[in-house]
Length: 91
Image 1 (cartoon, one colour):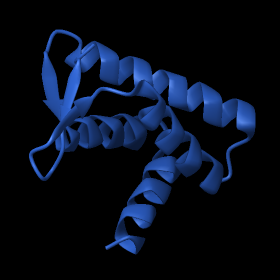
Image 2: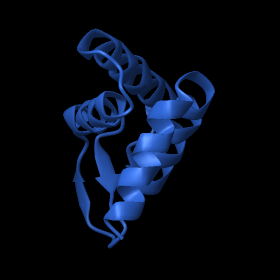
Image 3: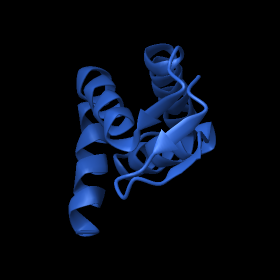
């Protein structure tokens, strides 16, 4: 997996898979999935992200976001909707 993530402001931080899992879990629970369904969804999405960016040294947060939302749109539209709703609420 990518070792670093480049944030919007240009800073680089170590890749943290738990941030992806936590974000997807939160959106999945908000969308009404059970804990078990949310965990399974988060693990599936994390696996897809890792496969997509595994050969890169660094990846942009926007690329990770786009991959997560594309996967959620295809498999869990309610979860992608909850994710987008959260993003809109924080400005």
